[in-house]
Structure formats: C-alpha cells, structure tokens
Image (cartoon, rainbow, N blue to C red; front, side, top):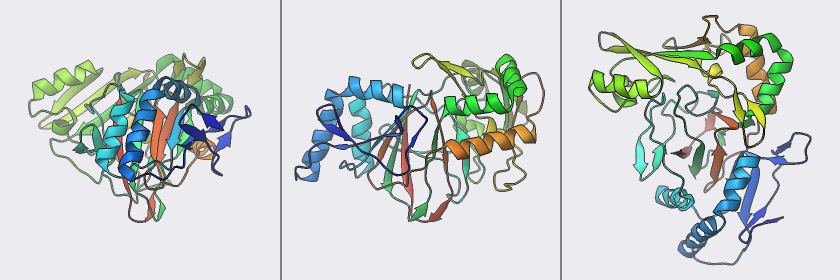
Length: 333
C-alpha cells in the first residue's frame, strides 16, 4: 500500500495487530525501485523525508513505530543526515543511566553493557522529568542472530496489568514511583546503571551536578565521592492525549532485580512505589511476562532505521547470540 508519494507499506511476519487490523510496527520501503547510485538514492530518501514529514510525524503518533527498510543508509554520517532531515529538536543525554559515546553529529552509541546481557523494557529516560519524545535507531551492522530491539505498545501493557493487578495499578496511579541510584565518580560499563555522576551530569563539579539534577526532578545526596540520586515521586502512568488512552510510562522493571535472571542484577539501582512500598515479585514477574507476550521483535537488517514514539512504546534489547552487532541511536525532544 502506497504511503505518500515516496513510500510503500509492507508486511513482515513478526508484526502484530491488536484487534483493530492495524499492524505494529509500521514498515515502510521505497516506492520506487529505480536503480540509482547509492549517493543519489540517499539524497532522494532525505528529500522524501522532508517532503512527507507531516505525514510521517502523524503516522508515528498513531502507529508508535515506523521501521524504514531498504533505504541506502550505510554509515553513521548517513544516519545523522536522516535524523537531521526530520528536523526534530535534539535531546541531550543528561541524566541518562546508560554509558554512551558520541559518534558523529546527533548520533550516539547505544548502551555499552556486554551485548550478551538483556536490557529490560523501558521508556527512554522515563525516570526523569525531562525525557525524549522520539528515538531513532540505526543498524550499521546486523547481528548474526539475537540482539533484536523488541518493542511493545505501552497502552497494551497498562490494560493487561490493570486487568491482572487492579489494586497495584491503582496504587501506582495514585502514588507514582521513586527511582534511586548510587553513582561513583567513575563509569562502570558492565553494569546497567554504570554511568558515574561525572559523565551523567557532564561535569566534575558537585554543585553543577546538583543543579543539573534538580532541573530533572532529582536530588543528589553525597557519600564521599559517591552520589545517591533520588528521583520522585514520578508518574508511572501517563495519558496519551493523541490517542486518548493511558500508557505504562515507566522504567519499573529496569530497577527490579529479577531472582530468575542473575545477569540483570544491579544493587546500585532500585525502584519503589512513592509511598515507600516495595514492588512485589508477583507483580513484576507478571509485568515481565506480559511485555514479552505482547512485544514485537523484528531481526535487524543492515541499513534499518527505526523511528520510535517514546511516549507510547517501550523498547528493550535481547541478548546477542552471534556477533557482530552495531546499533546507533539519536534522541529527540
């Protein structure tokens, strides 16, 4: 099905529909298969983005994710050109937990933890008051196997959790969550929350770090050179005005040390209900199960660009089975 003047919507076997006949995610490929050199094809793709930006933006607001496949995006520089063609305001990664490094322009590496370690579902930076509204992912090197970036519609998780644990969800809506993290002054790449306070707040000055943290609703307490960050109460359920529904907008399972998954155990981070109650294992296990059951995991192909509406979609990372894998990211306000 043609979408605009330059794109055609295609189907992949991994897509899902939630009873409305609309496939998730949306997958777009080039409408024209004309043989041109790669440089000319990239230029055409960038011009198509600019020409169809209002349509593409409306689609990602409704569909949650657009996967662009089959376009000539080869290098990080190409990816940066794609991001800039959309012209969404950039979002700085101040306060983020993962270790990332700048590649070029608006492009960063993804989380630096060993690729064989799973990353749980989360809305990007939902533990802060200032979070991106959109994310771009780019596959520079496709994995041999594993290493997918699963995505799940947040309102589906909310609906399933409310059905399964109505009392807990009521408490969650009433109180919100409190996120706590211990940060040394050095980075520890092997940990999920391994980013030290100096790189988290992009300063060596404790006073500057406190000021930047406060702007994001975070309080820093000092234990020598270690910072204890306390953020909350933060809403865990948000209302998607565009689609008139509630979403599971939080990073709750990231701060849960799953006894079944010793690899995902970081005692330096914790999440509680903002009234002080701990998160029960039963609720967390059901939440993890629902996310896995409802998610879509499309194997990466080299050159894929995935635009994610961070306000309505959670994402994660599956363990890499067969290297290589090189995924890059860009954040937008």
